[in-house]
Image 1 (spheres, rainbow over the protein chains, first blue to last red):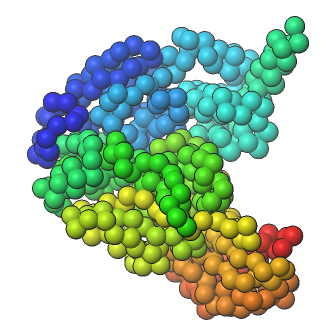
Image 2 (cartoon, helix red, strand yellow):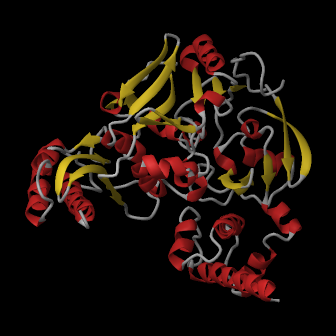
Image 3 (cartoon, rainbow over the protein chains, first blue to last red):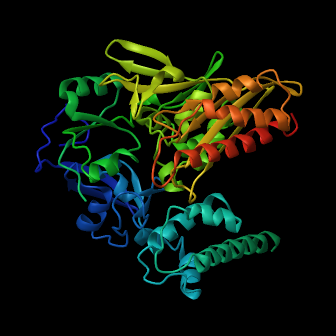
Length: 178
Length: 286
């Protein structure tokens, strides 16, 4: 069954819907139950387990992905809602190199302990730096306010993001002046 | 954590959405941004048999001037409230409130219409539209109607929406050159639900307040106008004495419920603090 069609409201547990979307640049078709979240679909069907399942109620942000270029909680939408959308997960952003400098800086500064929250942190940081080239520490903290890290402080994480912002800005200035 | 099984319909028009709801009755829910609805489904606080996705209905999108109002489509996302120039120019109180709503990723999905229709007593936009004397545009089988914000929020999570009706837009009176706005809230942590919050819009006559509209949220079951505080300010110069009088009068406007975490007296105290701060901001350069 496609996502648009005649009204059907049986609510049967075995009902499935075919969803088509672009995941990490690849056309993807997935047969899902309407109640499967995007998180379920990414992890269980597409085996993209870099998107972490934490609270599953929009509180921890370990499940952030980019939907049409914007950070969203994969646990707060159903896969059927994403039909036709472009989704980039932490795996896609890693492959493309878009966040390589952020990842290196997190690693260098040990801006993580268990690492469970890290994919979500990186997605939030990536979105922040794409809108705000050199954010203040206060702005960085605000951007991370929805991401919970329960085993380290946030200090090294904020440091890492600030360092990447400064390095990107310096590189840009260098490129312009050369 | 998994929602009960349901069926899903992506509606293309309001007619299609209304018809599907009509057919399914009480077992249907509309979904837009879903940032409040999806957690309640995951926790099984609700278990509809049909979810009707309204996010692809063109009529519910867009921001435009219509006479003396700015029509803001129900599907306007909170992040768009922050970026849309027309909202910044003609409805700056909405813009001022938007950064306080949850966190960036939630603001990327949550919608104005959803926030209004849910009518969470601790959420920002219901109080803002009340302060702005905005009108809520609704569609149902009988056609479109507009309800003033003052008549829209009727109880705890209860609105003037009849079952199966949809919020289609919010109409905000255009912001004028002699007006000033202020918004703030007090929360234990950034992005948490407010302990108390307030939005206000003042029409100034030189150094005097001609009229002011003040709305509080998280102080009771519905967003609440501070009419006594407004009355003592209308027609007055906004000096320290006027602010103190307004803060005293606030006790007649709100009666926060008792709770173990936040006693009523504490919430009233915080509301007075907030009122003083925001009036101070209105007074700066007035």
